[in-house]
Figure (cartoon, rainbow, N blue to C red):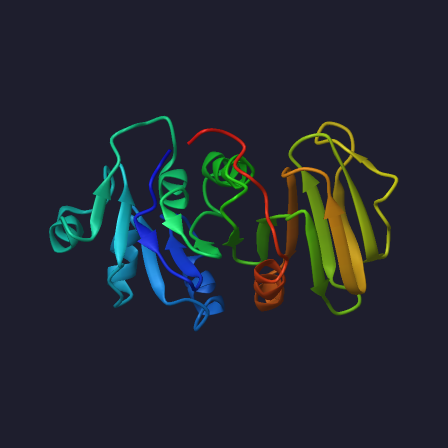
Length: 230
């Protein structure tokens, strides 16, 4: 069991080394208190005039200057290569919600690994913020107010079923499966309610819906239990 080393009752911003970080930082302004960097994300944060409260990772890409500044009180080296730096951070932050920037829009393998981690650690609520979209794992029950016509995409990472209210194309009869049936470009009619039968459904919304999605996730009650021993 991995032990959390960053604890906060408010959302925590997690900064990676990928693209679109400036857009994400602006979108998340005022929505967090503490900042954690995944490895070289620390260099970018420092360049923006903000030192991270903690940097976590294998620390193979952070600059020597940044590491000297943060070591040892604000740096944790995790010497294993079986997980990504994003996973190393996500499993060591205890907070109601993580806001992740710098994990979407860059290398495809890194992006897919981050999406995999959302389902691998469903008990860690996290919203990934990109240049145009946000992505999060659907909780068992989600109630979210959206403007009519807002794009709502549902992408399953495994076979599953769902029920919905407030979507232009209801999903109750859909047998979701990443190899057969996904839910790209559905639309909200207004208030939507979504229930899913397992922790494998990604919800993709426009970046403009970040605050509403955060409020819905913080208000949705019980989440998923861990899917594996950490």
